[in-house]
Length: 412
Image 1 (spheres, rainbow, N blue to C red):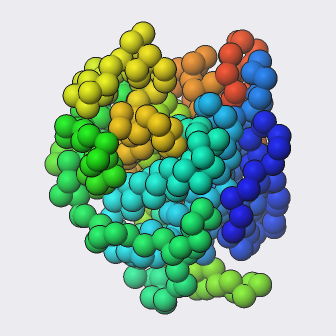
Image 2: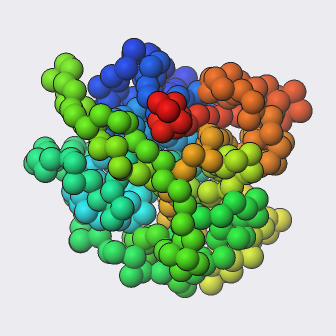
Image 3: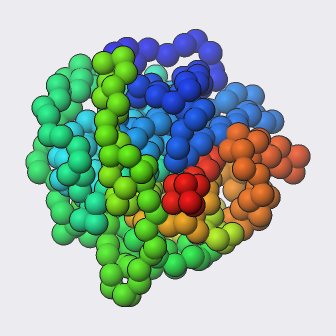
């Protein structure tokens, strides 16, 4: 798989296509008659000279009906990191899942961010520093699973090792993934809140390592998810998955249709200030954490590592404190993600993933209010984009909207 880039200064996301139902795992392919969700994507470079954002989504991710992967990557200092992530991040996630199918998904996401960050560092090295850009990232994985967080309806089958687009070597974990024993930036969402501090109040940050130990530390910075719902004794009503429990086969790909008692769980992970906001019964629930130099926890982590924050910028340069890439600043600007885990229910209407070009203009609840009455996910993403543009955002803007369908309600 080639990691070459076009000569254009603008980041290129894979072209969006459409299928009636089965997408066969093709990146950025809509399923126009999908039973559980619809996706809309809108983007514009705005007043910037170049476009450094990229996006990606996969419907029925890993050949399971109702699963989905969604992401927005906001590049800086060039397009390369964002463009590369838009093309390859989902492959690394799939490889990590297949390597450790019973590992908790927050740990899988942490491993994926680590592996992607490593690959971008190799890309920088192999380019002799010509490719040195970075990107913030917000990702969401809509997974169908049982009450134990497992997928017994998915047959165990060996999968070929995935080759890294950078090195050509198989991507394997260097050691077994931890099971949430590491200190983490993780949370389980059970109640609606607009306050990011409320969804991140259990964040614990170990003292960052020096450069010689940074790779090992990236693993421990953001381990598995916490059990916030259980600790508070909260229960979230289950959302049902497709009623049928059978498999469909097309073009040599078997699509697994989960049993009707399976639950839908939304896992999110972000690094930087790209943000994900869930609409639950009309209320905005932020699923991500803005990693900025103005954040006291992040500033302390950086100063403890020997860096400094000046005018809200790491070493006076970068406004975000976590990102993928940015190899020259990796000792301070880590790639470890903040993760959340949310069991979807009938009150969950849609999810908005977007770069800061939107969130600099509109707050979480205002964004939800703008598009809540728009059933078409594409039209909703366009309205949010137009709102940011009309209110003079000074950044690139990429907006991805996932509108959920509720099978129990639609088949009643």
